[in-house]
Length: 235
Image: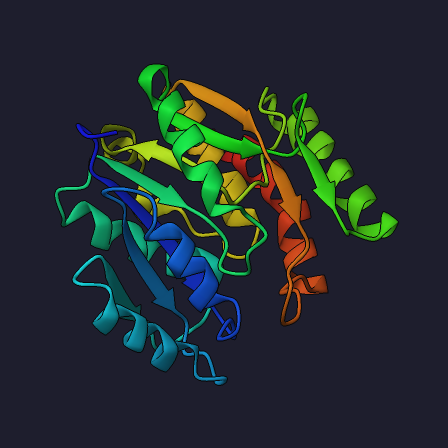
């Protein structure tokens, strides 16, 4: 990993209890830098992030977003910030400890022959812990639905655990990525495939959040249902 300059973007909204252990674990990965993109959390997550930044010796920074909230907006802002640094690899992961920071080196190792590496729940060896059956069924159906409409061959199109080569991110048309919520994750994968990126999937264990509430809502589900058709019609 010594020749890499990996950079992890962690979007947060009301994750004050999850952020300290997540940041601590990430900073144990050698050479890794962390950007927390806080979406105006009313629970004080931004202040917690600022404290962690002061204690990190320059390895953790914080971007405080204002205005309209959303996962997609947070990630776009974080990606643009990362591209303004010397990062060679840009990673995404959830801020709720669903993704194991110890898996980051495994994803980075696969960058040797891929432009995008996805931490996948739906390849052999991948699994999900502590989700109710309804949530499992919804996630599994969503990925089959996306693949059926778009023709994507990726097993886990909705995973938020990813590592990108900088050059791959620079090829993405970020200005035309308009979706938010979980649909943003699908749209970014679609753009990567359209740009000819080599995509690999690494099995991970996804664990339900320890603290706080899920951000899944009926609006998010509707946007995700409509997005694949919009992508196909746009191509």
